[in-house]
Amino acid sequence: MRCFEYSAKKIFKNEGIPVPESYVAKNPEEAEDAAAKLGKPVALKSQVLVGGRGKAGGIKFADSPEEAGKVAKELLGTEIKGEKVIKLLIEEKVNIQSEFYISVIMDRSAKKPVIMASTEGGMEIEEVAKKSPEKIVKYHINPLDEFLPYQAREIARKMGIPNDLISKMGTFILKLFNVFNKYDATIAEINPLVLTPEGLIAADAKFGVDDDALWRHNEFADLEEAKKGEFAYVTLDGDIAVIGNGAGLTLVGMDMINLYGGKPATFLDIGGGASQESIARAINLVLSEPNVKVIFLNVLGGITRADDVANGVITVLNSADHKVPIVIRLTGTNEKEGQRILRDAGIPFEISMEEAAEKAVEICRSLS
Ligand code: GDP
Ligand code: MN
Image (cartoon, rainbow, N blue to C red; front, side):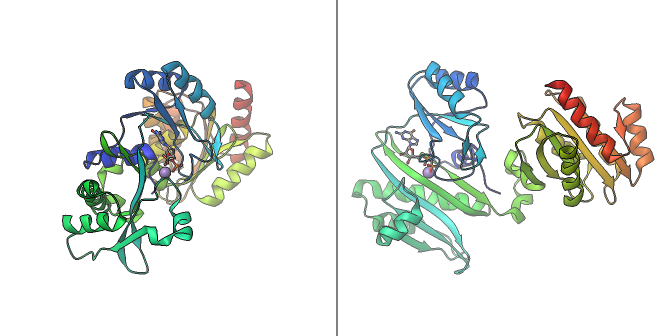
């Protein structure tokens, strides 16, 4: 699982790594409010998982709350390298004196984590590696040994930074390694780590966690990106969220929507044997997509039980603050029970996938 910058910074901050003060904004009003709360010039940073946002135009600055609102309006909804911008991180604009690079990555060929550090921060590290590899310090850590402060300072010294920064840089490197280790990360990167008049601060944050270790880190359970990792999930251009159990059935569901003249907004495969809770999470996930106008839930229960699906749907519909119509096609294992639960709750359903898809498209059309 790759974290968005704002989630990564939250985790880094909890572990004692200084980060700029910031707020997440989903619309221009929230961006304006955030800038007002910060009370100083801000950086507006597109929250996408691709790198190189700065160069791609995904990072802008504003001097006043009004300007922040205006800039947010420009950024939201655009695409950065094919990824749609849905959230912005509104952050105090830091006063950069110099930029550094530090990271911890799992070096699979060495079977050890490797710490990399460089004075050439702000650029993509691959470029530094190509042009001036001697400017990157690499230091492997034996996973069976403790990583000690003097080793972190040794890395800092090898970077070739001013003497008065070595101890502070060492502390930073030690903390980054500890975060990497504690959360079973695959990557923890700060680029740039910036020197400001107030000291060193993480201006950017990249954090990836081993999916097989997610179960032992409750801290991630609420992250949107972790929930996405639970399902095979792709967002698309349309406005009808397609959810199915099984990749094949979900694809067929998308084809049906297209056939009746609709446009899918998501491909979400909940997989086999989804529980009531995961059905609810899947629906909540598509509800968090601003484009979605109708949900088409297409379930042919095998291992997945229709009564679990029905109960999951009811849980969400009762708690969602964002209401959109949902068209359910529900057959298969325990279908009588599942259909009874929906009927009792007054939620309509279909048996035929074709009819359900057609209905979803009709409802969507009637809304626009
Ligand atoms: P990336 O392009 O996706 O790696 O995004 P970064 O967060 O690393 O930002 C790219 C570049 O924008 C940084 O190297 C900085 O030069 C600049 N930048 C980002 N945030 C700030 C900020 O708060 N103040 C200033 N002055 N520059 C910033
Ligand atoms: Mn960066």
